[in-house]
Image (cartoon, rainbow, N blue to C red; front, side, top):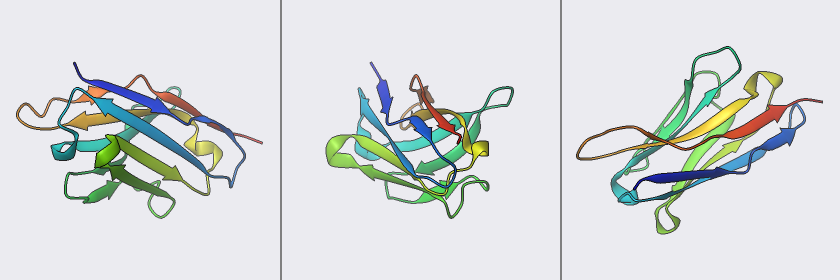
Length: 117
């Protein structure tokens, strides 16, 4: 059974930083692509960042240069370091994984990130 557990969300002031983490189980972590998506109230879920098993990364346009995704295969964990946060980054952040053979998407329950003064 695939399980993704996010942590690290919270309230942060504009311009601040936050790191969220996701621990995965039930998958062969080191061959899967891991990712972060987010959904703000009234908006569709959008890509934040992904990292594949070779460390290749992809970012959504709105977070390029501010967010960094990384992974620790020994800990089955993916991280998202978020810097220079703005109120527009307020959303529920979801961990995502997909991999062979089905490439089906699996999702965590989400962690709330709120950027406000």
